[in-house]
Length: 164
Image (tube, rainbow, N blue to C red; front, side, top):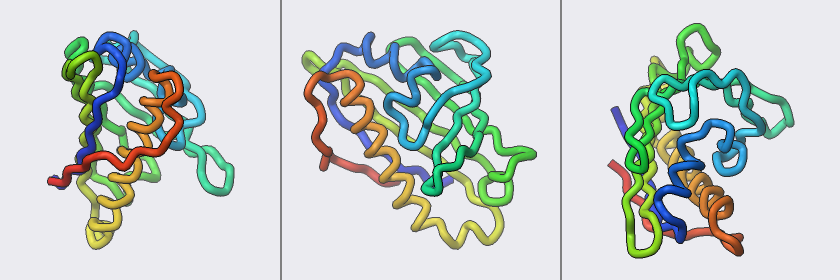
């Protein structure tokens, strides 16, 4: 399953970063196109948490996507998966997982984001385009996380990227 990764050191303690990335209610603050979160079940940082993200489209409409946390290790790792079965996403995606890893780095936190997606059917032909779009989303997520956690962090980031 192809994956796309991005990472950056954010000038905030691991515990602060964890409190934002492990709580679905914070996603509109930092994850691209998330306008609001609904139907949260389970607590922040919980391994069995579930939520619905309302994603804004270019035409201003909202699209709902359901997610569940598969694994969490406090202040270290948070892994979520999009639930695609019986949704419009099912025609395109077999599965999609996003993993967030945190590691102390000096006075800040190294944040690594990795998304793994398996495309379905003819959608597989668009895999290079999907990887580019996913990379852009992960970079925007790191920008948003930095803005949410660091005062004055309002510049775009041209940071390091890794593809696998």
